[in-house]
Amino acid sequence: MIYIGLPQWSHPKWVRLGITSLEEYARHFNCVEGNTTLYALPKPEVVLRWREQTTDDFRFCFKFPATISHQAALRHCDDLVTEFLTRMSPLAPRIGQYWLQLPATFGPRELPALWHFLDSLPGEFNYGGGSPPSTSFSPKGKRNKLLIAVYISAALIG
Image (cartoon, rainbow, N blue to C red):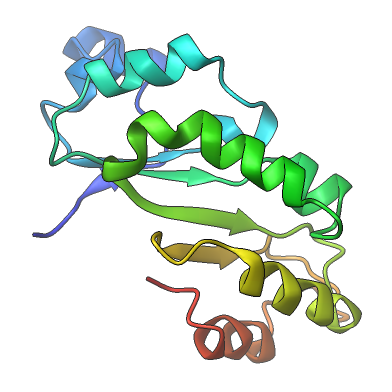
């Protein structure tokens, strides 16, 4: 199956099209990026509502919380990862992948932490990753081919 979706399921301009909820969005697309999880862990009842508003063939691509990727810098965060995955568990069959957005400060010195983090993740999910256009890999802020190679070699791209 091919999954097509957008980085969000609502937008003020979509109201005139009748798309005001995840349920309405899911009538047009079969996947979505869950950007909200980068900023806050959703309440359990919200996760259940997301499940109720989508069908079994719908897929979510949620971002790991910034508490893991940015504040903890992927270090000593097993409890945070467990809390996140447990919170999202009602949607486990609908997870297309979990997305790791690295901070702009991520650079070569952080690679050992990345490898350790990746090795600790459960094998039943797909994972993806990326960083903002400006990273420590390049003095001019351009995406560096090394970072892309890192992700491919780590089999992050599901």
